[in-house]
Image 1 (cartoon, helix red, strand yellow):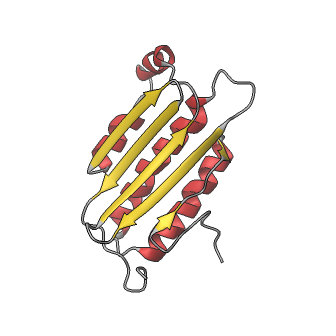
Image 2 (tube, one colour; image 1 turned 180 degrees about the horizontal axis):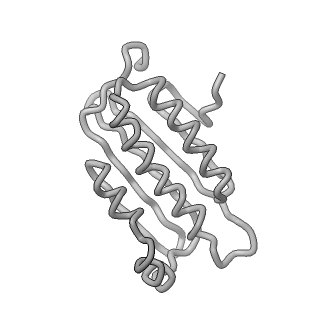
Length: 150
């Protein structure tokens, strides 16, 4: 059986304190994708869009949050489904430093992750403070699979 991290129910996926590196980000993406496919009635294109947006948030945390640190810090993912509003929200957080100068320099050759997240989600917010960065992505009109909601 898949390990979806800490899960209060079939409407929540929450791996926490995962090392912010590329390998762990890839594993979180795979686990999140499996959870999404198992518990929600989404067409393959929508699944791909959601997973891609979440992957961009994870990749940013893995690549940039701790770039000046000697070793990676932690990143967290919280996906929660509100069956009353049919909204799926996914929040990726880290405790690293947002380095504006580096991001602006890389924007010339890269920098497509944030616009991509905004294009793929119904709502995307990014909050960066001295304590870390929080990316929140939301999708409306998400339907749980018949057996997904308790």
